[in-house]
Amino acid sequence: MIIGIGIDLTDQLRIQQSLDQYGDKFLQHVFTTQEIAICQRYRISAVEHYAGKFAVKEAFMKALGTGVSQQVTFKDIEVLNRDSGAPYLMTYGKTLEMVEALGVTQIHLTLSHTANLAVAVVILEK
Image (cartoon, rainbow, N blue to C red):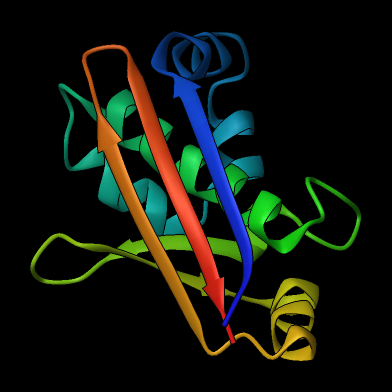
């Protein structure tokens, strides 16, 4: 049974502006060490990958029904990739507690990029 669905569209220019203005402070606030390492492997298109991970995090928060709150932080949501390249999501801390309390058994996600945008859809299943 689907218990939540979220979608997000992230403009890569917005991510680039945040990087230009705040640099590492922005990265450390939004992304885990592992996410940063993954995105930095794509030196030419790192912003595209940051935007994709950001879109997944926002879509997940919408599916969870919280948005950004004290209980759910960007760094408690980690977007990783399987060997095939397919993204998957890990949760930690209060976010993990909320996922468990809701009885989430599956987190489905997909994301896509264009030259300027990243879009992500997250579905929570019980």
